[in-house]
Length: 226
Image (cartoon, rainbow, N blue to C red; front, side, top):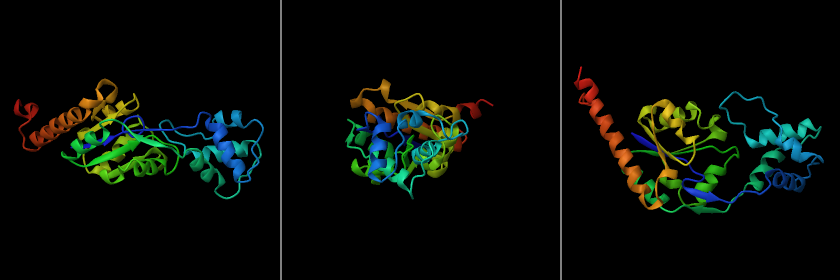
């Protein structure tokens, strides 16, 4: 049994640019990149033909958007601009620390986050003073797959050394419910009062651990009825 947590909206709230295209443009100009006049349109267009469920890192998207308008960005300017544009203030959500602590009492724990900005997940965890609480951090920008795709949950389970169907995932969106595609359990924080979250997570983790123990000992109800 293992538990993974979504990050943004589940454990923390962060500031986001009101206009991401404008924020990236500002940082590009600060790095001497000639931003095209129709940058807003270019930013919104699809420039990478990615497989279904795949994550496109935002710097790759930005570089392709510039190239589509004949602009060659020097060096790693797109990456540095994106990282600077999405540099957040971080607030830990109520009961988040208690929920993480409760889960850790039952097995290894991870963060599983959709985020196309390289390094943002780890930076956020450091600012929230939560980085050391987790055994594993899986971000879609590095993993290559986005929730609800099964492959990101399989990556988390593999890193935590458990079967995917033994994974309990805590999140705040329909994408997080993708864990159920691999047979895991979903704790939807939208349905849980903040003050009760730690108890609910602990209950899910404990029941899943008990089921695992029962199966390992040949005492689960399904096997016993055969």
